[in-house]
Amino acid sequence: MTVSTGRHFLQIPGPTNVPDPVLRAMSAPTIDHRGPGFAALTRRLLDALGPVFGTSDPVVIYPSSGTGAWEAALVNTLSPGDRVLCFETGHFATLWQEMARGLGLEVDFVPGDWRHGVDPAAVEGRLSADLAHSVKAVCVVHNETSTGVTSRVADVRRAIDAAGHPALLLVDTISSLGSIDYRHDEWGVDVTVAGSQKGLMLPPGLSFNAVSAKALRAARTSALPKSFWDWHPVIAANERGFFPYTPATNLLYGLEEALRMLQAEGLPQVFARHARHAAATRAAVRAWGLDVLCADEREHSGSLTAVLMPDGHDADTVRKVILERFDMSLGAGLGKLSGRVFRIGHLGHFNDLALAGTLAGVQMGLELAGVPVDPAGLTTALDVLRSA
Ligand SMILES: *Cc1c(COP(=O)(O)O)cnc(C)c1O
Image: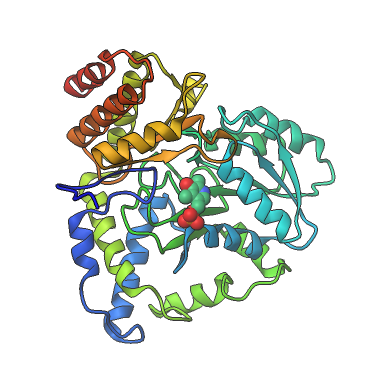
């Protein structure tokens, strides 16, 4: 057994570090979820959640991981055999379309190289060609957590409109909400899927669907089987401040505190902080002489950076050295990127010195693993942090 001193560095792109005030909020005694105190909590939460999604639409909260909210978005809006348009931006987009197939949907999966976001021109091209309007939904992962590439959702919306197509727009913001600028209403998103354990700074266990009026209309005729994920009983019970089943009471205490923290910092400041930490991280990676996986300057993620390993070096070896020597966890390469990249999470409860420590650990780990890097990487990042 190695004894660890000080805090573990949890620099995976989710779950992220949970702030102490959130942990303390969650340690309060569990209350009666059918009592008046709980109803007041639900109302406060639903009021505070809207601004984070950029919406005045209803937000449904589930006691589940983000995957549950993916399923909820599909089963509430679609019917067996419906066509959906998905884009191979990375591992999570691949898993979501596999789920759609498993649920009995017809998926058009547009291939991608895992280094770019959704191409708005491809959206427009596919939808313009669909004269019969057989595509019922477009699914986009806003921030591909496997690649560190952020898709331009506003441009995807414009592409759907330019094609004059009525498909629903379903967007996964599990690793972007509360970290990267996002606007459910302004961008005309129909279902926004989110989770608790990334930008929202909570432990895993809550997920969300923000639901447009158009999505609610689609839900009235959608024929995919659903029970637990059905929006209607949740929205109806929420009107009175309750849930149709036992909610995750203590996570909801934490959510109230996390939303308070985001509001106190101010969302524009939160997004700017993430963008700045991402820029400092890219500066380090490039000064080391390594490549960032994201290949489009417009699409760098504010939440995480995926670092490509030079040929002949294994990313998992580097991660192992860093965990053993410096007690820091980094994200592994997922799916076809296994061993080829490691991912540095810089989202959620995070600051300049935490990033400096993270990059110092990465640099030392690369050196110990025998990866040739220029040690100017770290000081280059510090220059960015100092000057901003
Ligand atoms: C983490 C993540 C998921 C999966 O969420 P779980 O909470 O693990 O079910 C899906 N999509 C994206 C973009 C993610 O980052």
